[in-house]
Structure formats: C-alpha cells, structure tokens
Length: 375
Ligand code: SF4
Figure 1 (cartoon, rainbow, N blue to C red):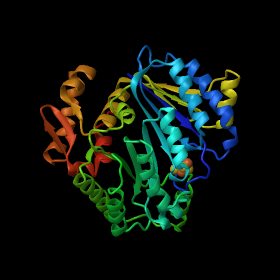
Figure 2: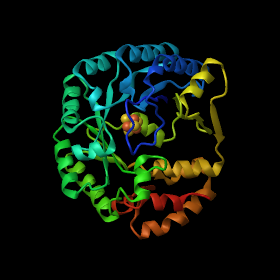
Figure 3: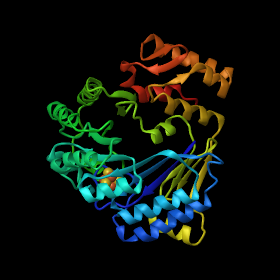
Figure 4: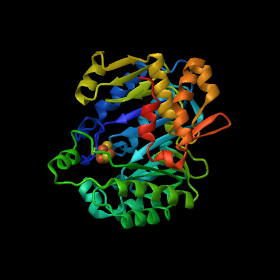
C-alpha cells in the first residue's frame, strides 16, 4: 500500500514562524490544479503496482481550494489511480476557512479526515504568529466540523511559544480536550532560518522560551493527553480509539509515497525525490515537460539511519529481528552495542526484542537518535 501527498502551495497570508513552501499568489490555483494532474500522470507508476491507501492534502493551505477545485482533484485521482475503498483522505484546513457550507462541501467531496490548524488558544499568541483566525473561530471550527459529519478529526497545536506560560498551556489543553476531536498533533516551536521569528530571535526582539519551561510543557502535554484517553503513539502525535494518522504512520514505517506539487517529497524505498520549491518554475516545468525534481539514491547506511529515525519516533519502535532481516547481523551487533548505554540509563527499553523510548528518553530523543545513526 502506498500514499499520495499533494502540496497545495497557497496561503492567504504567511505565518511568521512557518518555513513550509508557500505563496500568497492564490490566482494561480487553476493552473496549479492542471499541473499536479500533469505531474501525477507522468509519475503514475512511482509506487509500482501498489494500491493507494492514503491521500493527504497538505501545504500551504489546502482550504484555499474551493469545493469544485477539490472535487476535480479527487475525481482525477479516483480515475487515474487504484485507490482502496476505505482510503484515508486527509485535508489540512485553517479554522477561518471552515464555514458550515465549506465543511459540508469537503465531507461530500470525500474528505474523511480533517486536520485543523488551531496552533494556540490565546489571541495574543495567534496574533504574534500572524495566524488569520482568533480563538472563537478555532473552537467553532472543531464543533462545526463534527456537526458536518467529520468523526476522524485532528487538531494541531504549537507549544514552547515565546511568552507562553505554563498556566496558559494548561488552560489551552483543558479547553482543547473539551472539543470533539480524536487526534492531536502538538509540536514545539522551531525557529527556522529565513522566517520572521528567526530574524526577531537573532535581533533579540523575540525571546525564546526557557528550556526548562519547554520540557515542562511537553510533560504537561503528555500527561494531559493520556488523562483524556489519548495514546501517545508518536513523539508529537496522540490518538484516541486507535485513530492514528495512517498517512503519517506510513512515513514512519517506511512505506512508499508519491509527493505532488512544488516542494513535495517522494519515497519509493530506495530513493528520495524532492520537487522544486518554486511555484512558477514548477508550473512551467509541468507545462513544458522540463525537469522539476532532484533525486538521492539512499546508501545502505542511509537506509538504516532513516529506519532508526522514523521507527523510533513511534510507540511501536524497532525490532531486533527486523534489523537483522533487513540490514544483517553485523549492523544489528553494532546497534546492540550502541544502544546498551541507553538501556542501562533507562532512556530506551527493550521488551520481547522490541526497542522503544522510555518517558525519560523521549525528552532527549533527538540527541539519542543522532548517536544511534551510522555516520
Ligand atoms: S503555517 Fe500554514 S497557513 Fe501559516 S504560512 Fe505556514 S502553511 Fe501557510
């Protein structure tokens, strides 16, 4: 089974922390829709004969598409690809786009998983990030989405924001968990080079949250989510009723995926491809049959690193036997030697030949993972 990712590169305005590829030139949407169809036709065989199990509209802001545009894209994929009947179709949306009418249109078009970017529940933080919505719209969007029929609802939050106090974070979580969603993605703020937040941090006009407070916010997040019956199944992701994101889980478990649109990445088990992150260049390339991506064939070491980095992020972790089967006994021996320290420090635990992070280990997972990789 494989997945399709479609990068919708349009945003109505740019958030100050965001480094995803996007443009505010939404007038190019009709040309873009043609271009992704052209790209999809060319790369139809990318995942071999595997059927499509997940379709993910990410961005940018997919909710800049109108109902007809979305229906056209989905009809195209249903015609051109073999998509399983119960396929997960995820659509990322901003709260201010989610009117009752629009929600109904999305549902009728075949979107069965909605991911709403709430990010914060204080207007001062939303404003500082340059989000377009306010708290009221954020809360209404989740309630309205449920009324429109969406059961598989996910919300996104950001913690570690400048000046986000522990009390504000606790109050955000308390309010959030009173809403009818079954999946939560919560990421710590990253200051990406090239974003206004990064510039302000360097200038000293924005102050990074103290590390101790960031860790405390992560702890509060995990404890609160678990108290509300959410399973912590990936470092930044929580799900109730086993409603894991199938699409993202396929990234973490090494499945193939085809990424369409500017800046989209693809993976076929042996190589990675990434499309040019430039809308006009991408459109011209599709219209005139020009090259539009770069490719990197993964070495055995890179495949191992990828395997460790992605699998260890999840609650399913990695299995000794699987490492031996895929990479051989020598790699397994080296890995066992490397991991011994972490087992003794109780940062990683081993159960029935399966390695996963302990709660303590999760907090420094990035450091541990970089030490486990083969250089
Ligand atoms: S966070 Fe989302 S809406 Fe904001 S600029 Fe980035 S892609 Fe656009």
